[in-house]
Length: 210
Image (cartoon, rainbow, N blue to C red; front, side, top):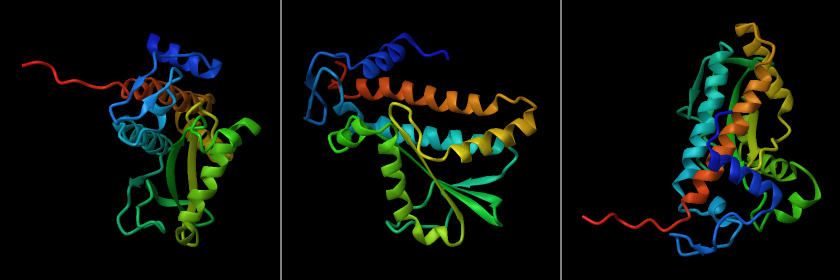
């Protein structure tokens, strides 16, 4: 998967509950423990928004590979919180309705999610999906709404049928039956790369001497 050594080391450490770094202070002022958990939820980490954009781009490219034209952050569409959804297909997706998608990455290691994550796999993604749907109820009457929520450790919300359709459409265009597997691999690869990036963003960055 062409992951660098550090990304692989971080991915293994997170899944085995190993200490990854020496405890230190984040550049936002918060304390980071040896497991690095704060780095994944720090509101001042630029990697979180970049990761969101990368996941959104991945969805848009998958639609393009399937021969489905789409528009990112479409003008004139707003959720209940006045924010625009991440994308809209320009042709009908299902039942004569265009697809509206909204991506999100959640951290099951965050204090607010640990209890739920410890009880059932992908429960955090499902909870975040419900919240996304609540914010987009006005759009659901006109468009086919599809939240795409991925947990930081890679379990995906209940949109497997949606992902299967993606893979089927791309396979029809490329002739390769493995397209769905490739799509999931790209998602997992993206998550693991940004786990490492977010951990490093928790270090205090000092200006270089002139």
